[in-house]
Image (cartoon, rainbow, N blue to C red):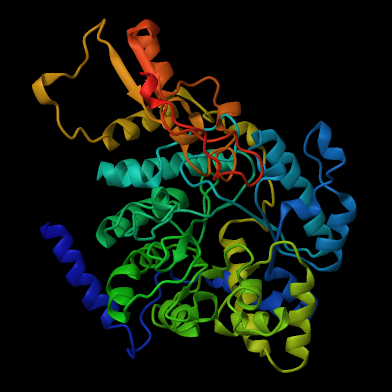
Length: 511
């Protein structure tokens, strides 16, 4: 408790003292060689090339779906449009909406990088959500979800988990992960409680710092061959929506925002975090993606931070289509870019590039803002070494999916367990004990793994995790199936498209 009080006091002093102060020393000392390269690029790039660097498109846009019936295949025609014409600088997401072998990742990213270097001379940066281990690379090592990692109260385990995830992510030629999640999960109704390290700002700050160091290594200016760039999310106050529903409005007091929700991001930036993803919601009537005070003043100016801010999925468009603070998508682009957004996760429309070009030509977005954003994108790419090595030989990553990594993930799982009460020393159970196992999650790999497992909702985990056991299977293996009475109670229909809400009739009485 003393540690928590101490950090709360430190957060109030540090965060509260930032406003109006002289510009502090940067968290990362700029590399003069990198900065010189950036200035050279800015002088020779066309407006179209600069705007393309600020655009991020989902891999679906450049996927050849007829060709994907026999496996994942990129579309050369769409690569010509996205990279050749629009000079797009970033691609994200998982092909065909499901985890891929590291060899498939490597081949696709090599193709993307060859196109990007040929057309622009600037490497693409590919980003994925490796949230709890190597969740989007098949046969990689999954770690417990963030809420479990927080429950270990073990900083070294969190750092080691991030190191392993970085190693295995890099084994597929992927340099950037949208993790860790340091939202404060303070409303039990919120459906993404499992992603973060819990409700406490101290725990989230401490674990977030360890994850950043594990992902990025010791030198943020020069990310090593076994490391990736981290992306803190979701900046900020994401875990306390008034309705309890994801991506819906919050109402956070300024003191709570400054002293609590800001604290993990403040700590992570000071630890060298290279990028930040923005909260999709609206707070007290102001969308985070339109909030210049929080994006530019608190984060970039007050902290003298030279990292990059990326939107979440389609959130610039949402300023128009959902939040209605912009009359058109073009006006939404103007608001978000002027507020401090550096890269737009569009993710389907290259029209972002057309809108932003028009806004610059009309004087609605200053060229200085474009140059600042592009410098931040290029800085991230240089720090990752992508100009020298846009892709690499994945054969050297021979520890991928190893027993060593699995053992460390198991240790994390074991340390995250909480035994509430062992009345009468019932545990460990004796052989032959009759066991009633209840609940729909007891025989589901999807629920055991959670979201961001093989697919966004984890609904294909049973398909890809067949080598592992559900809780029911594990108990049957240890105590004999004849001793296990299993009743799921409330169950849900098999997942198909959007029928996630459909329940089956409970049959608990039959036990």
